[in-house]
Length: 98
Length: 363
Image (tube, rainbow over all chains, first blue to last red; front, side, top):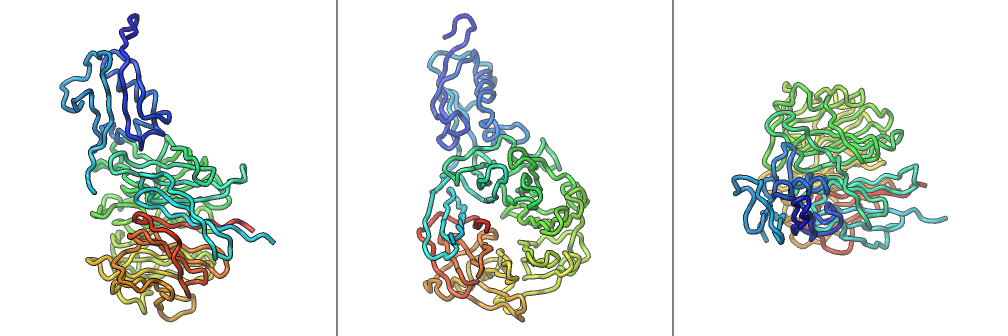
């Protein structure tokens, strides 16, 4: 935790298909105060991720899921949730078949 | 004298492969899969004069993560994704239009080496003037008065064909699934519908246009794959006449014309049964001076093949005699190095083949 700013370091995980949109990595960390801010930092740091996660109307794509720890962020009533050390933000695809 | 190199690109439901040979087309090597995991629905290759290198552009997409254009300047070893890939602005053109796939990427006229065009689903035409880095919507087409009548079919609502007049960089034709044929003579600022002679004549919109091809020797001669058969125009799309004599049925998607003027297509059993006629691998060719389409298949496997060839999975090369290539939905790739007389398989079995393109080294 960065005590001066209130920022907390959290883990981020993106699918390997999007590795080239996230600095050629799938697991990394970022610092933010709240979940909302963490998402903004993620998208500002890696703008290609925004392209693949959000549609033209700036909505999360229909079959993209973002999980904050064990919760789908679309289930949350608000995103200004204070982050705690060790929290995790995970991008998943809602795709089945085979 | 060194033999010229040829590369055949096969885009698939999961990545793309490159097959390379020399102009004899006897021995082939394979590279890839590249872009593994991404559906590669369109490909283009063009020599960049400023670098002397060939640039590849791939229209990639994924059912969750959407489409984008990726570029490679080292034959696919590394790819760079374009941040400014084709994308509609907000809710442009109503009904929540969004770019779902990139159906077609075509280099611009040779006099415009930095220009590329992309046909996308939902149907629209995008252009790049900087070698594929940034793209903008060709609004003249999307603003066409018929746009609201274009009909999105279940199999997609894309702009599937982009033809550029080799003799006039400002004259283009496009084919739109659910929308018809449109022509511009001013580089895309304004467009006219070209439906005279098609089954929906009398209406601006003919929703059953499946593929367009151009005779490279006579740019006013166009071929059109329609849900109800093959049509030809000898006046740049002003009018169309039936050109399907000899085909076993009306339905099918792919259509190509060689530099010798021979046209190739792949008939399918029917609209409901979208596999090759009678479950056998077979193409049809119509010689430039021929009276009818003729079946071709010598060398193709004779086992039952209830597979299809998608509209962009038939291609020709610019060698002499012309080569013809097609990929199936079962991932097989076949070629003829003698304008369709005899056929062989390229090595390997791939995922569902979505596009086939060729590139030949310049003399």
